[in-house]
Every structure is written in C-alpha cells, then in structure tokens.
Length: 69
Image 1 (cartoon, rainbow, N blue to C red):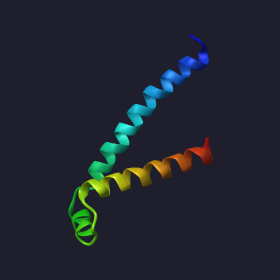
Image 2 (cartoon, one colour):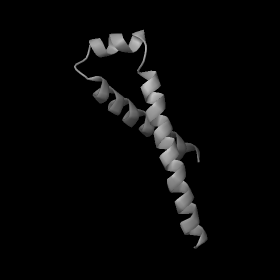
Image 3 (tube, helix red, strand yellow):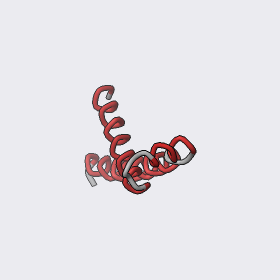
C-alpha cells in the first residue's frame, strides 16, 4: 500500500472518531436548563437543534483548521 493510501486510511479512521466526538459533545451541550429555555422559545425539535449544532460546530472546526494548519 502506498504511503498516501495509508495516510488516507488513517485519516478516514481519525475523521470517524472526530465526528463521533463532535456528535457526543453537541449532545452534552444540549443538556441543561439554558438549552431547555432556548428550545422552548424556538420551533426546533431536539433532533433538529442537535443537527444544527453539529453542523455549526463542524463548520467552526473546519474554519479554524483551514486558517491555522
């Protein structure tokens, strides 16, 4: 296997772990009284809010990495 393909395989594995961590962190972030109040004042369901937060978080991580690496 070429070095490039090996790095690609490693990156795929790492990306899967990062995605799972972002998902878990966003789940944790959406717990608590502050979020209950926020969700109560919007038409979003928990799942919609979670998906939106995951997307925003991933975009901010990508933006940071593109600027700094």
